[in-house]
Length: 307
Image 1 (cartoon, helix red, strand yellow):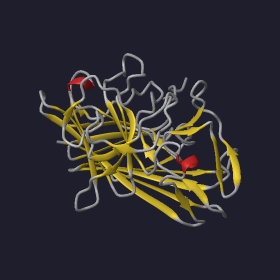
Image 2 (cartoon, helix red, strand yellow):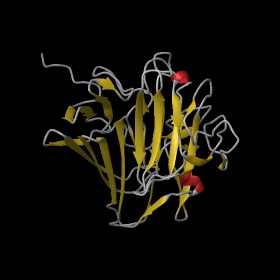
Image 3 (tube, one colour):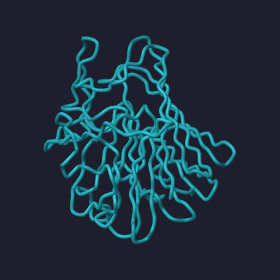
Image 4 (cartoon, rainbow, N blue to C red):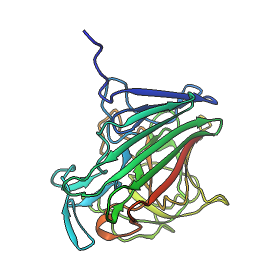
């Protein structure tokens, strides 16, 4: 009798510079990432499905679309509702559970590819690729989407890593998000207009203890270094451990989620810091939505490293 297939399909592991990562066939998901044996991300085991979006690619939109409905180029579209009532939203894109083609290269990187064909609610064609590479400076992820169809296509991209600052729960960690604005969200997780973080509980411009605050909010107005990167961090001061996630200029937003609604084995055990090219509901609002011409590509890069 053949060995049972892992729920997330084929696995490819890459290693370099003390970093080790595992990528899965299902969803081209980042199942694990560690440095010198210390987990940097809260992923999932080989015998499990991806849980709570852990390590998943969010394409062709991140987060939610209200009622799964949007208009584009004068046409109305209805997506399947992957977040059922009472929230009643289309959630986290269309590729999380599809099989990708994995191509390892040199032991330190792997590229996953997929053609997303037209379907009800998203009648557009995208050629997608994501490359995970590890080196002395951590993990680097490059995501490319090309419009392979004959008409303009709406597009957004996000990723869903849960960062582990140290031991215990997130309450005892420091969080840094160099943002000037945040969106409060309603009971369905849909964003209200962005407002300044100054003098609010959402101001994490300098390292600040998370404590009892509950977060599931998109932040924007990100400060960047001379290379154009914005960097968010979680730190366990007691353990002296820090995990950083950097994003290039393609990512104008980052969602912070402390996992309060998750099952006990995951709730507040890590902070999801999700790089996003656009905010939740962008297919309806148009905010920072990418409009891909036929033959055009969109490229974005982000990464994680231990400090």
